Length: 328
Figure (cartoon, rainbow, N blue to C red):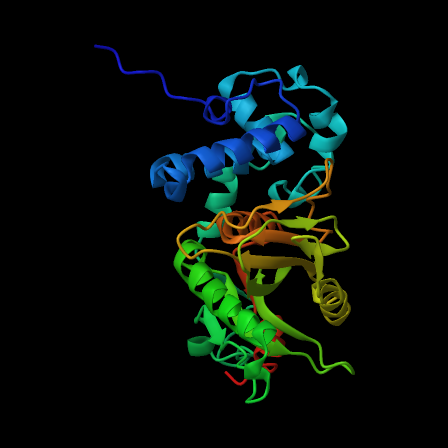
């Protein structure tokens, strides 16, 4: 007896391949409710729905998925037109690739995996007469620093606890899912810069000539929305300092390409919670701060780092400056 054909992501969400972004989002919400284990569904089906939406909800990933399945990318309506596709997350394109839309012209997920998994090299070259700026035993470590712990009074604040818990979960996530497959990545946790405003960041992740600035927090149930300027939870604005932090870090490290991520952690057993809504055509390029859940964070951050020049290099002068900002 022949095996049943594998269901496509469109089948999982119950939409046609020509569905626009709004239809896909609505279908995802219906499917997620139907598949939720607490509402009579099961964990496997709920996971399949989440993975399907992660791909179809991202214009570039959807285009790649359709190309691999032999579907014409031009079959979709204007909700996923060429403008949206070409202005998607440039993190997964090699430098200088511009707005070419041919799938073969982009750096693929396999290319990114190859770039990130290469052994680490150290820059600039060093020798016994020209020692490295960071002792090699320290430069070889992928984890540095520690989560910023709130003071005695700050512990009474739910916001401070949410931040500390979120940073701890992001540390565990990156240590488990990103660092083992990216030997050149260096994660520095609990950073305070020496600028006038004492700018702080939960994490900095360095690889090659790219630097990801990451803040995190845990959140109560409920959907978020992010329009590139204001983050809202159940309609209420959330205090977000990361855009300014990214600007400060870029000024301090002008030779690096700096981008920012806010990682929102929901239920520990569901990395794709909470849902974070963005408007149609939202700029997902690294030039804009991204607000993501844990299920999306590793993929997008790795893609950004691996798409840069010399992605497997550890820049020792930069690492030395970053380590000086922690107690590690």
